[in-house]
Length: 100
Image (cartoon, rainbow, N blue to C red; front, side, top):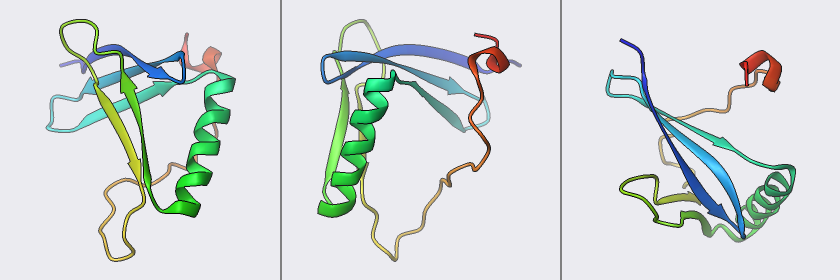
């Protein structure tokens, strides 16, 4: 069975990024965020501030439409907390390689 993909727009400082939630039908989900160059710069700055302040920040939806991703929160984990995701060190995939 193919995974179910749902796409939503998430507000990012007046811009919109595309968020796609994929249900792998196994109890696991994928979250894909498409960002513009400006949004990448904003996210990089927000992550740098997060690193220095140990606080948190959000990307929030416009909450338009029937359903969607309403909020994505970034925060610092404690040193003793168990992590359940790791950064994939693979090189970025170009739009041509993705087929988009």
